[in-house]
Image 1: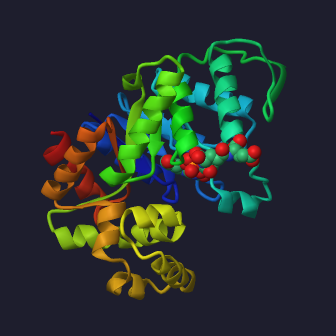
Image 2 (image 1 turned 90 degrees about the horizontal axis):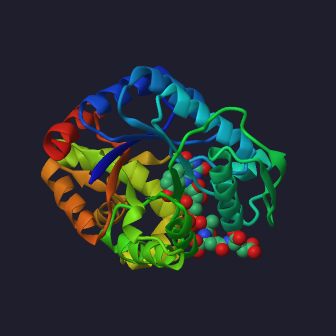
Length: 326
Ligand code: F42
């Protein structure tokens, strides 16, 4: 098993560097930085992390092929790879529709765009001159002027077709989920894709990109994750809620409370125990370990501690290091 940690650069970059350094000291293998235009820039953040760490791998978690031309993405991540001494990973997903709506970007053919972008990225990383006339991605002889190195490509994916594609073409897959039930199917879909491409499914790193909250006090840990879980419930497809036995009507109610900024209602019982169980790994170190072991049994190979990590981030990172990675 490897252990990753996610940071959202809604915090200042130097603060994230402090946490990333601590995570490295505590034995984490990967740090993943999310990418949304309204937060600090993902590559500026990764550059600062590269300068402040020595061993931990540095990934975009995840960038997308719509806001930047994929040749520019190849150059950006190759620069991080050079600066960090070969520690870069590119995590790529089709992106977030709500963000693109705000930016005036059309979200067309997300699967095809991701597939063709990965094909182009591999060619750029191999130092090839890229000429492509895909359905979406087109290049007329583009080439990196410096050596990128062999940068692993991970996909952000949840849907069945995306997971199958990850099995076919990616080195790893970051799945936004925390419960074994969500991984049972996902692992099968990834394996099917790998087999289709003549690959060994074991060559694909399956990461649970989880909402994570740890504290010695279980109630504190759970409370710290409630708002994040509320956002997950509000954004989940009905099919996913039904899979966990959650009343689909609660989605609109929670969405309404979020829109009104009524966090009191969310904390006061709207976000139920069942929702916390379905959409987070939260509680004491023992609670978290029990869930992690269930995920590993199913075929998850990397646990990513995502937001909020814990009620006190610094304490939580140390607790994971001591009690779980230890
Ligand atoms: N998105 C961000 O913008 N920023 C982040 O930092 C971020 C982090 C992140 C971390 C982990 C993770 O799993 C996802 C993350 N995301 C982030 C979201 C990510 O970018 C994707 O939006 C998300 O993972 C994709 O969800 P999905 O796997 O459900 O894929 C969608 C597109 C879907 O509908 N998939 C379908 C499926 O079955 O898999 C396939 C749809 C399909 O086939 N589409 C055809 C096509 O070509 O695209 C369209 C048919 C047609 O002709 O139009």
